[in-house]
Length: 342
Ligand SMILES: Nc1ncnc2c1ncn2[C@@H]1O[C@H](COP(=O)(O)OP(=O)(O)O)[C@@H](O)[C@H]1O
Ligand SMILES: [Mg+2]
Image 1 (cartoon, rainbow, N blue to C red):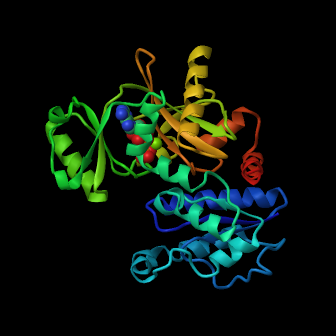
Image 2 (spheres, rainbow, N blue to C red):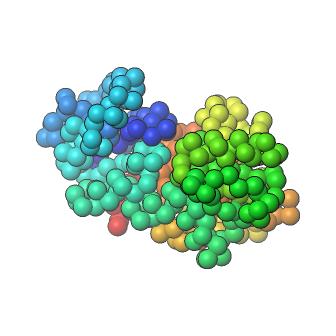
């Protein structure tokens, strides 16, 4: 197949997306596909739609080309009005399918998906509605509550309403302060004291105008891939220090990841069922990864669903596929296969 692996962009997760995209592109080429790596925002003026998909291709050179724009990002965001860079839509239209290796706001929030629907471009992962619902943790949690998916108690705060103390909104310390639409734990703070809480609220409002104050759940953390409506083996995530913040997510060796998680069969089944419920409640399609916490009494809480989770060979979903005997390249192909069914 002729495949565009779309990555990069302008979110805080640009670099992670470039890594995911590079690995996915390599894997798909290994499988014999003519896959090319493309920056959604910077595009590539050197590529023509009729001859871009070739047998010989240097994925690393394409990744280096994307990174050559890193230093120009801030300036380009100010001057470039259109989100899709040069040749991006032409190449995506010419491809059999676009593998979305984007992470973070534009890319994961449904806007790219909506545009592609209107342009007749086939892509991997959820559609625009599910992507948008899952991107907003406030809305996701309301849907979880209404549909029997347990989630930590929380309250939404708006910047215009100013500072509110936790006890006035029915939340006890310690609590978690997080932006509604963030990712990669950017804008997530655990507040143990009133001082930490006030600082966290200020910091979170620096990123977004709507934030969530959530009850802190002490216990173990898990994540579950759902592919084509089916739950994959659960992975347990245990950071050696602190919580699963940006550093612990991306610094090798900082988090112990165990897959399949050491959980009793009944608890495994229960959490997998909740993951599939969350996937349906949020109108997700093709694949997603759902995050959970479990307290000392085995109460489970769904935190969020990630519609375009990390896709390097050591990312969580690929590890879960590995536990099923599926290689990284097999998983990349599988995600395309399920997405083409729609
Ligand atoms: N209510 C909570 N109690 C305890 N830890 C939490 C809670 N909410 C989030 N965390 C920690 O913060 C991390 C990031 O939070 P999450 O809501 O998943 O946001 P993100 O979209 O940035 O991944 C989680 O993986 C977990 O380690
Ligand atoms: Mg998360």
